[in-house]
Length: 316
Image (cartoon, rainbow, N blue to C red; front, side, top):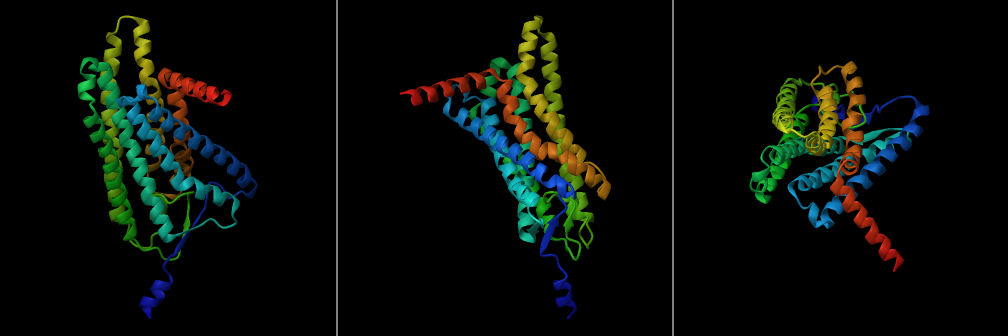
């Protein structure tokens, strides 16, 4: 009887607290995030198609950008449709299985993006600091290995966190103080010890933020040194412009992610982290294709040619 009573009290579904409990804000937020999602889908899918159909964009830099857009496309689709439904529904419910599935894919794509941005920093380092060896160093095999490594790290991190989450018991409390199934809000609901999970979070998040951040920092230190050695002002600005888009993207991604995870797991910190997470869950994937297309001459030229081709087909 005790076992049956215990099983009856186990949580089978979770309720999202969402961004706000003010009913008058639900509809405006729905339209805001719907617009963000549409721009994200169109921007990333457009960049994927553009890189795919233009042979002169088949270089290591655009190979990584292609994968980054693919990750952002999938990443946004993991939680945004459910988030939009929750804005217009009376009860924001997700099943236990659905929550764990969302958690796995959310972590898989966010960690993969982490290492994809690191690979892009290494690519910029080789292009600027060792331009003569660029084609040899950033060969197709090397790019494939770096990309595969990013996805493997994403799978390993997602498996570790989700596996540890599955071992926890959730009894009565089932209101997630977030708009998606994330690690820290779920840990606050467990009625069993979360010590192992917290250790895994500290180790895994520490590795997945510290190692890429250190790699990116070292890469850009060498890049900065190379830029300072260039005598002409025009040459410096040209080299710096090739890195500026990537610097903006990694600053947005790592800054908001670090603020979310490298904090004490308390309700107050979760409320703050919930707002900051919007930047790397919603705003980041939307801005990435815009930043890389608007600030990139090659992409703008390819886009212009593609539009001219479409216009000519419509005319004839």
